[in-house]
Length: 289
Image (cartoon, rainbow, N blue to C red; front, top):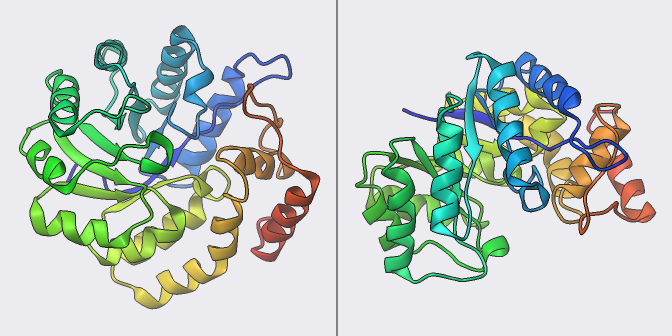
């Protein structure tokens, strides 16, 4: 197995002036490793990748790899809607010693099935283990099941992050091919693992890494009672962390817990006061605050 367990979709912390706070990023890496996560996923959706310059993008990845220092795996977000850009980013990150790359479905230009196969294959040909990232709500382009099955034949395409909100997709993928599956939603981690997923790329583990690790470990061990109890305890928080566009709520929650300063880069910005009241109540009700 390449990737199993909990992988935190790391936020990118910023200073008030909008610059990347690399020291705080290092602190968050340490916090997650202390929580027992299997790996970290820098510069994905949760890491606000669209607003990072290429040099910042790569420096964030290198910082995470350097600080982790082999204590957990690093799956670098190096996807793009231009195949050339995705290849170049992945090639550059490969030098840092990443364990894998998260490759989002090309967004906005919506390639057809043949284009998807050629795009992902071009990245996979670099030899870095690839995690496909199916997130049609963001990319407006789903990876068809037949395309997943064909891509799974590539030696370097080892896993798929399913963030389409469908547990049935996991079942269908496992029937079609032997690719690993990771849940892309904390709220669906438990039911997806029951259908054959091997873990989760988690937003919630930015703030409760040890707790998400306990949930997923119990689920993978078929300890249904413990897994269900933990799922029930944090289910409302999992939902409320998406009360606004990710990563706005998780950054607000982390700020409430003192893990970072709540700073974004436009067009991302703070949520409403009403949402913050709901989020704070959810954090308190689940024992996080």
